[in-house]
Length: 377
Image (tube, rainbow, N blue to C red; front, side):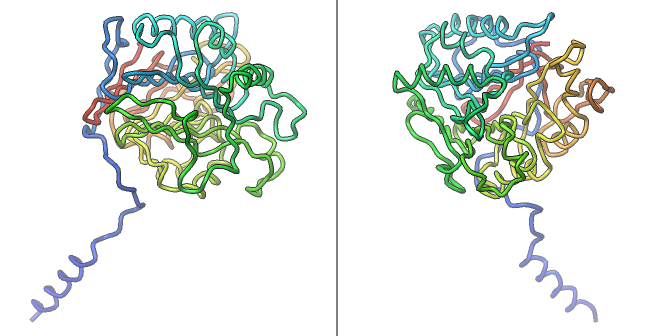
């Protein structure tokens, strides 16, 4: 007597399958469901990548990410930490010299250098890069002097001098929030100067400097240079990498409101060096990344202006990121911060890597869309 009711219920469930927790736009997903940590970076005999090789360079407490393509290279930010025990300029120079020795075909040329925002832990190595290598395009948020145009940010003079030099060459591109179209971002031949035949990366900026407080933020949020960081997506074959600079919570909310799931990415360079306000669960649910990388210093250097002093990466941020990752990694015991100068042990099992834990991190995308992770140690 209950059979007709059971059949009716079955038909209803078939016609109305459960909705997904959140919508994921159409894009190719990583083929592999897990990543293997290969200890040791690609050596001097490594061939150019099939699609993309991304070097998150260990420059201590700061950020410098080198995107290597079959026919070109792009650098995002220039680090980094400067203490009695660590010189980020020397580290960046050594890494780039080794890179260009292997990639002699690139003639010591960076197709573009992006500076997400002018703080010194993102600009310190910029004079070196412009002096020792050829920079074809410089892309910034154009706000070396902050929102009022009067006071230089902590690395503002470095950015401003570089902008002036590149403007004379017609090779400067500044990106303002006002020109970034919702759901599309902005790109052009300066933002995206790379094309390698069948491998044609798409480089798009999704956030820029705000001239006016169009987002309705509190004044202290609007005046914070972190919230004017360029947000950059590098997409090769439907497998994007997203860099959010030092964007903080309020700006992340505005970013998501403007662009939503178009930000969906395979790899996330975790914002603000793993600070408590540099990522949100809403961002992780929107990105649905396979893997993530923290660019931060080692907590063993107990000096001012270090990861130890700032308390990076915060345990809460690490928990948020690892909960949102879709790929695994061999378990690794690391140190995470409970606050400034306070750390405890933590075991990472999803595919989160950190320069402060493992040195330089290299992620490589194959022509088939699979990823491999290489760690310096």
